[in-house]
Image (cartoon, rainbow, N blue to C red; front, side, top):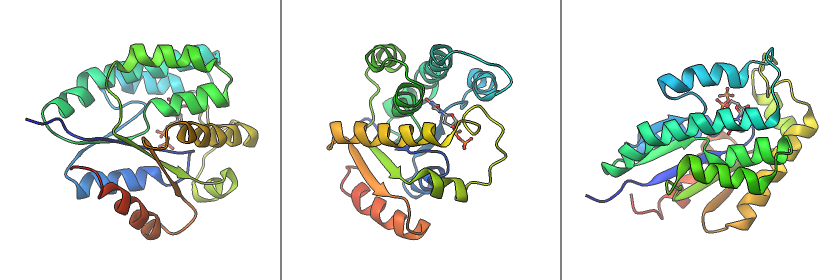
Length: 200
Ligand code: TYD
């Protein structure tokens, strides 16, 4: 049996990636997954990761996210792909490079090495970046301004956005960048055109 396809959606909070990822998973009969917090272990980790009332260093934050990811890959993503099922993810390793690396300032080489430990050979076939300016994303999200990332300032979200664009620029075959400003329907059409090139 051939291995399933692994497609990841990335972008800043409020860019519309969750809507698009869920839609694509449904249309393609793929397994929808998300990070952080998509396993029983991950639910507990997500609580700590997002809890703004518990101060932690950027390294601690990164390692909790990577622990969540390592467990997610091992217990959900890899078994699905190995069984021939495609997987569509709402966030994966690039979130950690963008948020903890570019956003928080954790050393990128060290993060990449730790990411290798967490995910092994489980690499996306394609990463779709929905690019949107933070002020537009902010308008879209019904924010309660309460979690660790929602309370970060605008410059943080700008660095995350630029980080994503840099990562996409380093690997043009592995990434597809789509402008998130148009309507959900228009963004969906652009994404679907690119996804139609993959061997589903
Ligand atoms: P997510 O669940 O996608 O956001 P939402 O609650 O809006 O659905 O992600 C929660 C937060 O975690 C988000 O602000 C981004 C952050 N995050 C990181 O900083 N690094 C990571 O590696 C991941 C997976 C998420």
